[in-house]
Length: 112
Image (tube, rainbow, N blue to C red):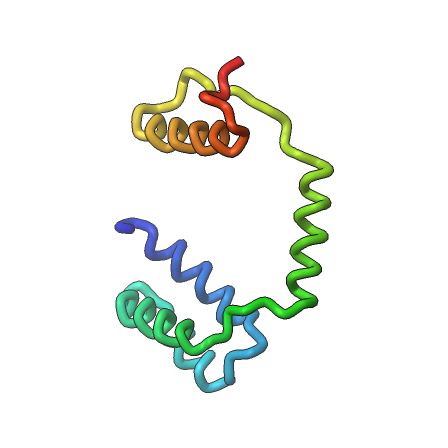
């Protein structure tokens, strides 16, 4: 994703800083690599580290996520139409997004 390096680095560094399960040494190593000059190595090391982590949710996390989902369902987002003034580059994205929402709602399209 050319041009998104800074955003990706910022996000991953935040995740690394907040992760209580990363050892201090590994955290420091990953954070040192988290710069544009070492972007490829940073992504590679973060990916390799992620393969060693357990990605199964604990029963408590499953319950918390379930509660959040139920709360979200009680307060759904308001329906809104896609404006006609979307720039050309965004049309493919918004069309795909609208189609995904329509599919989730078992409708042909989101238009009224």
